[in-house]
Image 1 (tube, rainbow, N blue to C red):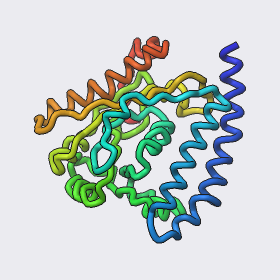
Image 2 (cartoon, rainbow, N blue to C red; image 1 turned 120 degrees about the vertical axis):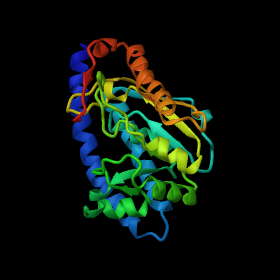
Image 3 (cartoon, helix red, strand yellow; image 1 turned 45 degrees about the vertical axis):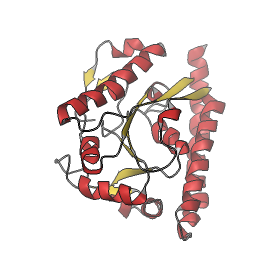
Amino acid sequence: MKLLRNGIGSILFNLIYYPFTLIYCSIGLMPLCLAKTDGPIRKGIHYYCRGSLWIARLTLGLKHEYRGLEKLPKEGAFILAAAHQSNMDPIMTFPIRNDVTALAKKQLFHVPFIGAALRKAKIVKIDRESRTAHKGMEDVAKHIQEMGRPLIVYPQATRMRPGHYRRLKSGAYYLQADTDLPVYTVATNTGLFWTKGFWHRGGTAVFEIDGPIEHRLDKASFMERVEAAVVTRSDQLITEAGFGNLLTHKVADDDA
């Protein structure tokens, strides 16, 4: 019965969510790029995220739960080092503080409409093809300090399916070293529900915030803290949701 319910829910979700995204972004968000400030487009993105979460709950029975929100500063800049399992992750992040910014690969800024929206929302351009972790981080650090806004970074660099892992990127370490801003972490189990494929499932997606990480740690100690709070804690949330079997034989996914 649960399998059938998830199958029907997945079909409904895909039939509703993707047209909603296309229509909302083209008709709703694009005109907001003409506004003088980034306020209107950020408000538009906020409503898009809320609408997406509502569609997931309506079609899939996918609820979401925030834990540890009280730990985050209400204003000013900070760094959010988060697990990345699903497209649901940024959708759950933006409503926390809709002045949050992120890193996006430079190629996206050349895509019609998308590039305009990224520039208007003041998303930070980076070169993901660079093999030097700290290359360009000084400029990024200066930028977020000047804006006074939180920045989300994904140490895993790409979406990782539950049970898969890869060596973490150290960009958050260099950002903290350059800015002395607090670094908070996010563990999640969203990949169990809003998957990378067509089929999804109902349940409760957890977005758990912890931190801040101690200042002035050496790189190895800092990365150990990130590993524990982002990867290990996410595995615990996956087990808590009843899917610990997916972690029995973890797979190295260095080319993800």
